[in-house]
Length: 211
Image (cartoon, rainbow, N blue to C red):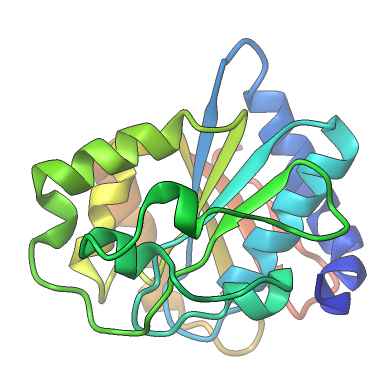
């Protein structure tokens, strides 16, 4: 596992504890992690949060990377990146082929994005893809979807249907306010609760949007 994940534990402490709080009484908890723009550090924050959940709660946690164009999760988790989610969508791999346990973190599993490519219009909305998302959403106690920016990736918006809450990752001094407002509006219209935000590369990291 990438050393950066261990360094991020203080940053994600408030995040994993909030996820654990909203998970009480649920058999499965699904969180969609996304950002208003690229390069906010979503994959890193998502993986660090998942590792903290697995370590502190001793529960099984699955991270599914759905950013097909710009994969990054495999290097952070220290696992092989191929085959992965994109290959499974095309029927070139099975769920068992693409699911990997993260070394050094018992109970943490990841499905990397796989072969980099652009999303095919409509592929997330097909019946096989929808059935796959339903299966993934109940595969572990906690399931975190590592998604690309929803504003510019319409395909990934389908994941909102299979999520219990949304975590926004912002990058300090980089993420634009207008883009953040537009993303918040998009999520609120979907009816999925906003869990909060992580302000990456800033001393004040977690803020609850709904308080």
